[in-house]
Image 1 (cartoon, rainbow over the protein chains, first blue to last red):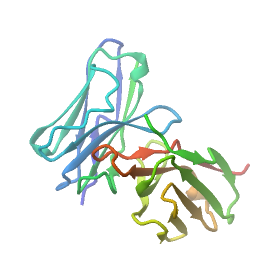
Image 2: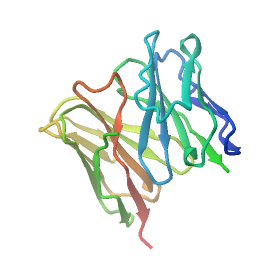
Image 3: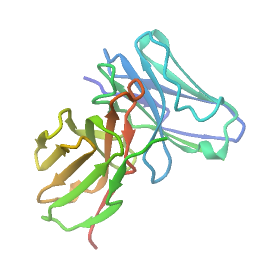
Image 4: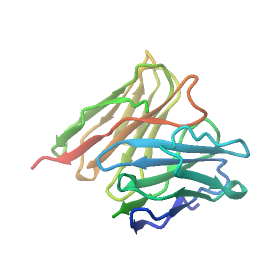
Length: 114
Length: 113
């Protein structure tokens, strides 16, 4: 079946603008995760959704970052008033159970803030 | 945030060589995962480990869940050019946050010039 998809694949925006990044998880997966990967670095956890439970937002770096998951499927990560340090690859992953095991990643959205 | 200690940071391989890398944690983990990431792609799951001492293979790749529950190893036998990429370990610790994985910073495999 189809894997995790993300859009856009690349986004260039001006400092101060808002951006929305989209993630379509694997069909039937109940858990969805957002990570950020800066150049040459590992993955930084941002936020986790599991079913209808309140999301774990403990990794969001500031209140400019927010995410929603509508209908238990598609998720949107929003960054308001973007800053240059927000430039990174934003990766989405999904898994079939809670607990974080065997997460499957999308190709990522490369965000460049100029 | 918390990160795993993954080593080496980078290594050069010659075709046919065996490769080893490892991850260590200061806390006990109940799950270890190994991913490979190619340029411009998301990480791809290679091997998942769920039990201390577990040894699992996936083709030429073998990974082990350390008995102390604080480390894991990945070995690649008889490397080939397509093994080039960045390998990440990831783990989830007992009592950790609801579901997120903790990632190492990666081991970058390159071909020897």
